[in-house]
Image (cartoon, rainbow, N blue to C red):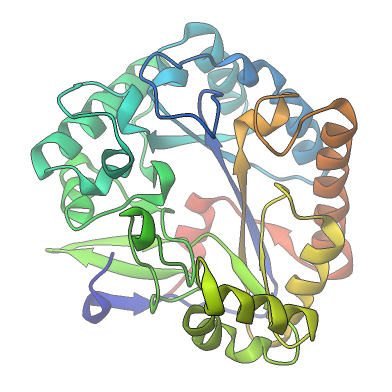
Length: 332
């Protein structure tokens, strides 16, 4: 996953753009507060039907990567299992270490990234979660997304040992090391394969695209010029205001459809064909995340999804493909 010498690009036959949707399906909690093992409310799952209606309209099969708080709640997992059985969604795995047994580590920022845990503990937690999801849904998950994007040096080995096939933890052109998280700079921004031993895995990076005159070189320039504070942060803002280089995450959380549309047009024009759309399940409930604080923001959130999906399928001529379909379509 991180070994730059052990990856292989994955290409598509044809030019049709493909859209996949992966939802971080988890408890709602105060994002500004310290991590809390007792914060396990999953009321947001009963609100997911709002987005599911939009997905059905556009013939999208989303992937709900679920964490332990969701998987252990019979009502919450039952909603998702029913959709899965109807063929309306896939269910994968999402590891939030602080709410996932065994509880052998200190709850802190460093340990909130599962890849920072010792091999034995990271594996034990993912094994518990994998088996719980299999027991509750009747299917063993093969799609993984690390909580907080926190894949680490042992994650590939653990995924191989537990039978996973697809990972979607990588955030294109992003460095979380300021927060003791992973550094994804230099990794491909489009799907690629990585290996552990004789096992091959498909990586579907979270989409971060660019607009502006320098968009073609965004993956090189942005990680060099952007930073958390000081002159580098100022430089990123200046580039954006001058319409030279703007980075736009493919998520409806704080980003609107018109921005996604211009970014997607630009990235498609320079060769990108796979777009990975993502958000948190808590954003479907008013007050569940910082992005949806009232009914008006929720309505806009859903509208932005609808408008973007309509553009992608109709104006851009694309179609949806879930991670298992992409696995079959990509070559390399």
